[in-house]
Length: 91
Ligand SMILES: [Zn+2]
Image (cartoon, rainbow, N blue to C red; front, side):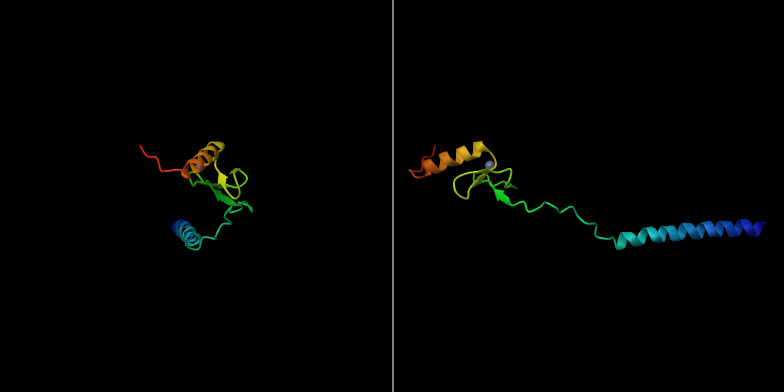
């Protein structure tokens, strides 16, 4: 009876030990989970005014190849480019 208990304990200890090892192994060779890099064929464009990147579908298309993050920046850019032709006014 005594040996039976000892054997049971040894068995449990062995199970625990192997469980610990099997827990460590996958951590080392973690399978590269298929990252959801499915951003699709979305093209990223940068705002011509502030330079922030955003999907082209969400961008405000401006004149020619220009894109903007908002209509406000498109307005600012058109104003800035219109004034940039003149002299450089600074306060
Ligand atoms: Zn912007």
